[in-house]
Length: 252
Image (cartoon, rainbow, N blue to C red; front, top):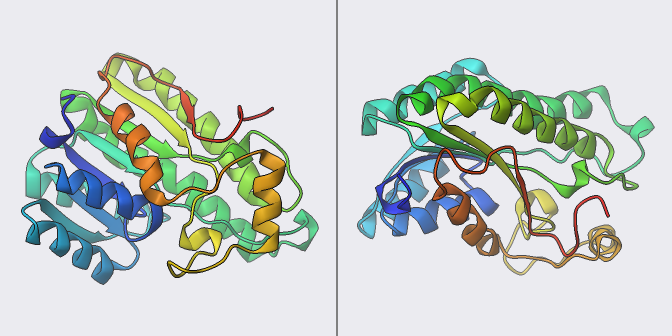
């Protein structure tokens, strides 16, 4: 289905930032939305907001670092709506900012578990449901995975691995009519980037990062149009692609 209003969507990391923007925007457009996050109560509140304005949504508690949670998320989606059309794998963990040698084992493991293994577990869980009618698996990646920068540490390394995972699944799932792509949004005003309130100011480190990348600071809603575009492309269309919203080509 190429019309977003006719789709059943799962959004992980859906309780804040980019994921919340996806859920609210596509819910308002008529999509049936499943909002997933570790904060189940907040996921349910956002779902309730969507329902109050005439949309269709449910909230589900999900820790993507647990395969059983990802399986339960897809099962809840199928129980509520009977099918699955598009997954937005929007979960993420940034970890420390600083040299790799200063990263604790805990931060390294958490960053890899959320960004890489969480995406793998979610893909495993969603594959059969997406294969039924053809679908889309769309990952929120990062240009940090394309360009080494001081301070990115394991975040950039984990996102590089995620980009490779996207291309691998695109190759393996092509014959199943499942398109697998990623969005590289660049710097966005999200809690993970330190924007915990609407009027929060970016740190000097974050501003330095934006300047070095030649990028622009976005609101979460700025990422919605490219997500809509990818989600409404034919399932036998582009796959294994990275859609970059940065100020310059990733890797340059």
